[in-house]
Length: 272
Length: 274
Image (cartoon, rainbow over all chains, first blue to last red):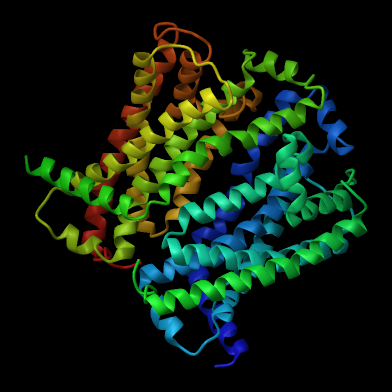
């Protein structure tokens, strides 16, 4: 079975399952309100005459809602990678199809990639909806640098998939996805400045944040779309995000193939 | 007596499953630590590098203990969240495993099955809260006020509401066959309306009006009064009574909806479908 046929088949399965539960699509309209409202109202509690002076000192302007919404959009992609890769394995374990799927002569990475590819499209659709909902609910707007911002975002997402392979390896060993995916996903989002400028964190955490490519994705997108002050020139940030693709893919791919071989040798794919 | 045996058997089975996947322990240690941090650091970002903005929030919130204020709100939210996922999604989990229909065919009270499932959620909620209090004291240096008896009372008055809501969602999930959306609606409404990180009077009037129909709004306020504002149970009795009263209404409503949905899915024969 060719690599692309496997991706296509997995894409179709994911699509059918997604549309089988249409309530999920409706949730997309509600989720941004749910996650962003605490930040929005907290911001209101801090604001004097509609502006938050303290926040402006960190970011260059007082658009905390734009800051939050863009962070939320980027985090939607991070979560998509982690959940679709990590949780799909646990789902298949539970459904009892993981061992049979993996016994087929299909490329394992293609099996994971096909599912993620559909989730990527679904997330993009949801991110557009988030933008519309937040525009009407919180007055969210961006400037015209959308194409440039997409280039930064896509590069970051390609690198993240390599990290997703690492998560998949952990799920295969631990036989449980929820806590692993939940904690790594949330920690990565928090440390990379999803909800606050990283300079707020203690110095040790700032150091970790500066190693994470998602920090630069968040930062560059905000600089491009909201005119906020970036951590460093955008060219340098793009270079760091691009280098991370190679690091994550090499490290993630190597770990995943090691764990996969071990699982096959020990014969633990069918158990959970 | 038979009901007690069912409750015990379900709880025993669930606790055995929990210990089979020890990764949950990581969540118990890490979640209470990092979840409030997200809001605490955001509040620092709003306050600015010199933290001068904190005085604005302190005036609005009515306390100088901003970290404590946020931590109590998020701690209650986490307890409700755990219950929603475990308890609210319990029947759906059984459905996915393919064991729901066979369990349902047993000549036992179905309500006992749901009560048994509630025990695991309760154990987890208590563990999260205990670990949270220890971590907040040792790591964030939060000084909690009140005594153990008052803390237990505050915790207990939240339970009828949490389980009532959990029961409503467990029933709806059985019918709608989708957990994520239902749980997200429940915890989302609480997140928006109950003021987990801000005083509710910051919201527009219509949202404040809706917030008063949720027991958690009063539960969170009572918890803040006791745990960080050094008030006694008598001083916050208004919040305690409303939290408990509304919680009991949720519980009765939950039982009623559970019975209706149980009847409906049996007639339509859709228990095993997902």
